[in-house]
Image (cartoon, rainbow, N blue to C red; front, top):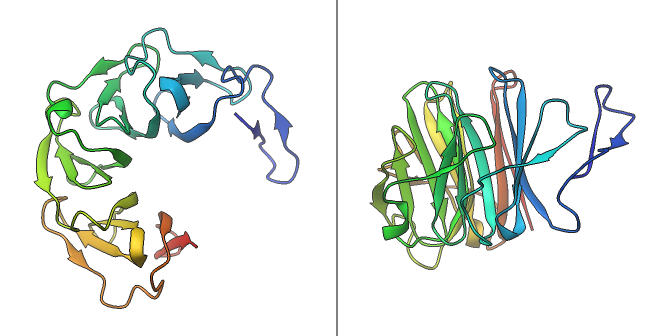
Length: 212
């Protein structure tokens, strides 16, 4: 895990990053629990209350599968993590993880997950499909609204717009009010480049996406 700071300018390396040489793919925070959770290669999950000292999850439940994304669902009181194998798991403390009841049956390689607090829905997107859930345990298939050749890489919830926004291959950007019905942006402006991440700023009222 890289480093931590409270000053933006001066960073320090974490004392016990706990991932060794493994890649960390995503980090999220629970303000309610004052807890950070990081996920990465080989099914590894770690948690920290200060960004400096990290502890490996006792029961990560993903085996050696690479975990690609994690989010906090405040209304549910759980973290939700997704993996390239299609596995999804949830945890109330970052330490003990439980596999969702049915996500594995869809066999989608998931790349990103986010929670929409305003409508109480989690959505994850991946190489071919989209899944959504209201409890983090039972997932429903939204199909392949983007087509099999247009994998999605990242998703976020723009709360003022009340829309999920996802980005991915071939410069594609799509949005949805519920995670089920999706519309392609008419002028995404990325050409055929792959877009890897997207974020919403409530203060700015802006979405920002990046890729190459």
